Amino acid sequence: MSTILSITVLALQVISAIPDAQIRFKPVYLSSQQEAKAKLSAPAALAVARSGNIYIFDDGNSRVVKLDSRGKFVAAFGQAGRGPEAIERAGLNDSIAVDENENVYVSDPATPKVLIFSSDGTFRRSFRVPFAMTSIAVNSKREIFLTADTSRSTELIYVFSETGKFLRRFGERLIKPPGSLARNMNVAVAACDARDNLFVAFRSWPVVRKYSPDGKLISENQFTIPAELIKEPQRQYYSLEFFDKYPDSSFVPPLITHSISISGRGTGYLLLNAHSIVVFASSGKITKQFRFRAPRDRDNVFIRLAATYLLDTRSGEIYKAPSL
Amino acid sequence: MLSKLTLLLTASIFLAGCQLSAASQSGELAKSFGHVTINPSTGGKTPIPLRSGLTIVNVFDGFSPGCPTGNRFETIERFNSVRPAGSTVLLIFSDKSFSTQDLENFKAILPMADSMIQGDIEAVRPYLIDGKLLVVLDSNGRLVWQEKSNVSEQELLTELLQMNQ
Image 1: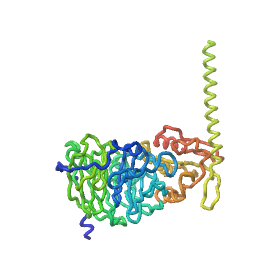
Image 2: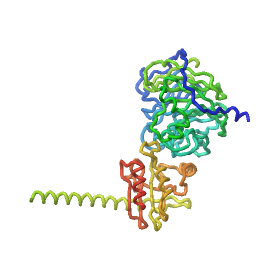
Image 3: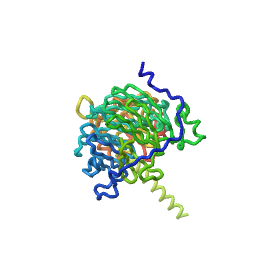
Image 4: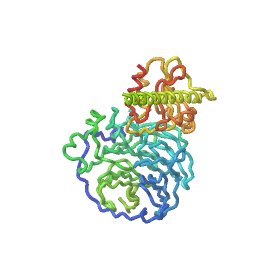
């Protein structure tokens, strides 16, 4: 009963101005200052291991780059080309995850497949999946969670074992009828906490869901859409009812949740466009939302957040905030 | 007059040449499909099973589900839901690119599990378009239809449906 009560039913989204916060980002890794082998090219995503090591999916070079906790280049692994070990250019997806033993998981939505490497870069295996994915997460049992990018009327999350066996699927889509807009609206990103709960945020709808390890919905919480993203004439149409009615519309949702991550302490972070960060508690409840000035404050810069680490995908720079 | 006749003759030869070339290519492809084998669960490798009706065969070495022109699996599913009685659909996944586990996953995740099978598609690899190829074979293994490059999934479905009417 308490579970049912804790689920927030969203009738309308909230659009409002977001307060500014002063965050002092400290540089950890500046690609332009590295030697040739350590330079990043269009890095797409990063994951931080419990040891503090940082793993970057260096999309333009079809490889994974490993840094130590101080941002020193350690190794690069993975390669372009064909075959089970090859990584194709995956695009700017939340496409890397690290498990407790520091195995590294990369989702390649182009092929599409999942590749698994040991922390020293040894290729362990890959397996194919019949849909593109927008995010990858892994729990303590090394179960792999993929958010599916498909117009098919199906569940949101697909779970595979570390050996690549499909285990189960769960999660209700936001928009049920098929269509191109519905597909965009149902795109999600996911991350696991240390207790194997799964947090899912939709890319273009202001909601964070918390699922139990066996896939039961525990909570659904709403954050605020930054007012600058949606102008007045559009606001009246920005509703699930409208999207459900016109699932094949060419409307492009202006809100983008780029990434989701959970810190070791269980605090969750969403990075939205318009330089907005949403912080949520281990219950899934939203605790803070603020705008920040990125270290290189430019328009259209695409950034990722892994706990308090920030990746600027254009310059290949990584920064760390003392706290958020 | 003579120059017009020469032009006509040249054009005819050229067109005949094109047709001959296309027909020859189809013949080659049909012949190559004769070398495609499937790996049934009973073990061993067998040729593509042909029934009395048409057999719609899609071979896969890869696919791009996020492709803006559409998703091949969804095209086949849509076709399968309206396909004429007596026809068969077969989705053959290259055993060089897809493991047995991959195929088991696909069967568990996608509809049309009964139509999916692993196989050796090396003989038709040169003809693949973006890692896949859809053809229609008659009961004698003759090539009735094949997909062309630069065709959207919607156009492909329309052609497939018209051909099967």
